[in-house]
Image: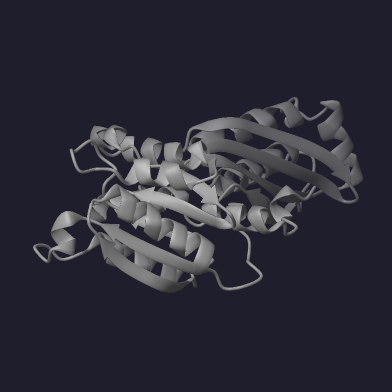
Length: 307
């Protein structure tokens, strides 16, 4: 199976469709409950719901998802019956297979119940109509390449006693997303120096986004959140909580993070933890959807809020 541990839970939906070709007479019998085997539409709906809940058992590489809804409807059409199945869940992976399985089994059930009154019934198609809720649905192409900065905050790295790995990880992740990382620096755990650097990167360098790494804990020298709080004009509490919530699912130590996220002018500042693993987990929690904030800051029209 594909490992989906790093994905975040979102509300995922999918709609699938199947078409059963049959004569108008057979279709009418199905909808009026006059088939020898009984109420075809009701039985097909129940079988579809049952099948959707069993998808991970039927399809080997499908993950188990906690379905929150399955709905199946039937439409009389020229030369057949159209099956529309929808599925939803709040989970780390999509529900298109559940919707497809529901549509397929509903079609097979109709086939089974119609075959006694008509030969030559055909299941013509099974297809995915739509799906929504994956992380790509919460990000949008930006009009320009973003300019980013990374500030490593660590006494030991600054003094050369330890090599930086967390800052390098941030640079690599941002570069993979197509951002231009124009600034990388290392500072000691000094609140005033941190604040001054953040102000310079926001007000003079006019960067779009700045990531710090380190100094977010409760050690005697951990002052990054305080420096950030003195610099930002508006706090984005939800982004920091998203990182903590994601981290807590993996280690309870994540609850000790005091990371701040906020906006100064047109720049977003995001505090990340100091360890490479915690940095990557935090980035998994917020990238790429957090970049939507850039669109909001610049006042550009957002497709995410379009009807």
